[in-house]
Every structure is written in C-alpha cells, then in structure tokens.
Length: 292
Image 1 (tube, rainbow, N blue to C red):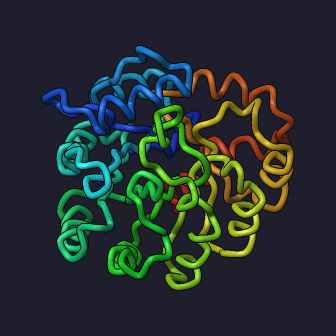
Image 2: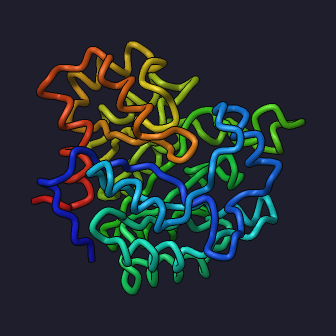
C-alpha cells in the first residue's frame, strides 16, 4: 500500500528504471547497456540502487514509478526479480511506486506471476518493451497477461518508438523497431477497453500515431520520458497543451535522463500555466489512484 502524500509533491515521475539488483546483477546485458549509455550520452552513469533512488526523489519532493525490463526469452539475460523491486519500493512507499515486468513469452506462468505480484506485492502496473521482448503488442499470445492486468485494475505501460537500447550495435542488437509502433497498442485498447495504458516516450517516428490513439481511446495516456523536452515535436506540445492536457504524464527515464535535466528544459517549453501541474503531477496522481 502506498503512503504518498500527493499534496507535498512537486511532481510524479512515471518512468524510472531499476537497472541493478541488490547483488549487482544488471537488468540488461553489458552490450545493450553500453549502447544505451552511448545513445543517451550517459556513459558511466551510475546505476543507483532502489534505496538510492528513493533518497534521490525524496530530496526533490517527487514520487517515482519504478520497474525493470524482463526480456529473458529474446535476450537470454536473466531479469531482476519483480519481487525484489516491489519489496524495496514498499520500504520507501512514501516516494516509490512499484511496477513489474513480465516477458509475455512466459505464457501461463507469467499470468500467474502477474496476479501474485498485484495481490501479494502491491504492484500497480506492468512495463512492456515490445522491441526488446520481440513481440507485437497485439499478438494474442500476450492477451491472457493483459486480461489479468485489466481485471486487477493495473496499468500496462508500453515502450513506443525507437529505443536507445541496441543503438549502434551490429543489427541493433537484434532489436526490431517495428514492434514499438503505437498503432499495435491501439488493438490492445480496443480489445481491453477498461485496461489503463501508457504509451511511453515521444514515439519517434510514430508521434502522430501515438497522439491519435491517445485522443481516440479513453484509457490511453502518453508519458514524456526518454527525451529532453527541448526535442519534443511541435504537435506533441500542441496536443499536450490542449486536447490531451489530461492524458500526458511527466516521465524522465531515470537514470539515463535525470528529472533535473528534464524539468529544466520543460520550464522553457511553451506550456500553459494551468496545464503544467496536470502534466507534472495531477494526471499521474489520478491515473495511479493516489487521489480520488
């Protein structure tokens, strides 16, 4: 159970990564991590532990959603345990909100795990990275997993658009960008009408598709992580300021992009004063049921 005092927060970051476990195991292979660091010009960035993340966000009067990526099927690299992340977040429930990640290729075992994580470990949502997990979001193989997330009132967060992971590695590290087209998630929004969905990132090269899906489907949101706001496409800023002002969420992609850098650039963006608090905190607080 979260114990977050929303009134005391300046922002809620809906997109941060647990990159390392208590015993020092990384969430992705060194090759893929190295490519991501180079892409984000974050070489040598520290991989903070979850307690360190809690301190970092507490200092800034922010809360944060934390997750890892489970892509064992496609990469062969063992994940960080969802239970470890959930338990660590529970120790810092004033600032951290646990999400999980289950490789959809795990089938019925993954569905059972999802139910257990929500009911026994307080997990609030699930991160999918179709490109790294090598699946199409609208593949019926993943539908039993969405079904249990919808039933339990959880949130499904999908990476969309290009990824820095594998960038510059021969063959992109085997990662296919086509799986990250938001139009594939539109099918999920149709087939699971009560499932709350977040399209992560400005969805280059499919920004217009993401805006269309979020505009058309009542429970689809967009987070603004993974990019500095100074690079946001103009149509994203226009929709965030108007039609989608209640459906756009602050996310950083910490630790490769820090909230400090993101917020500094966001301050310079032409966003209406009444819309800023919605994007930074209010929309996420409602979606995460931190406020009524």
